[in-house]
Amino acid sequence: MPEASSRFFKSERQWIWLLCGLAAVRLFIFSAAFPFFNNVDEMLHFDLIEKYSRGHVPRDLEEVSPESINYLKIYALPTREFYERTNFSLPARAQLPETNSPLPEELAFWPREQNYESSQPPVYYALAGAWWRLGKLLKMDGLPLLYWLRFLNILIVSILVWLGWIIAREIFPENKFIRVAVAAIIAFMPQTTFYSVTNDVLSPLAFGSAFLLLLKYTAANMADLRLAALAGLTLAATYLVKISNL
Image (tube, helix red, strand yellow):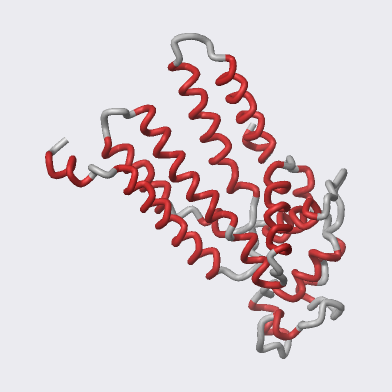
């Protein structure tokens, strides 16, 4: 590596902390910019989080809960066609301030909608449900509480940047440039999944942890039962985050 590059990466750990911070800023901006609820099942994922936060684990394809419906009818963004067919000129949250008010026609199907995401494993929803409860303990409510839930992704992605650097350090112990480059790619990758409430966000962190432990296990001179057990648990957690990870 040229001498100038060597000086540039002299404080490698500081660069990783900087990348974690930049990833957090990027996630904050885009998570705050997009309105609720997007069309990638964000409402259904939120409904499960709300249920788990109350200690209720669905046993079948239940309907969306009344508590979730209250957030939907106040904070959901109707389609352009809805505004064209009605006299509404303001977002639904301004037109429907009361939680007992009727749903707009565009959203009226939701109380009858079965939440097909109920078939998904519990790890993400349990974690996000605890985060939701923490927000309530901090006296949050309404739209700030919804964004608090999205901002959980900031913590996840920041940890993912650090994890990517740790993995790259295991594979490329002599190449500082590649190690920092891996972290930078993760920090700036425009993956829109991380801008919404969804169980997909935990998958790379769970599998990345399993991958790191498998690397350490295969590199060990002797069979390490502790590493083997941890690798098995993280692989199981990866599946328990999302079925398709299998």
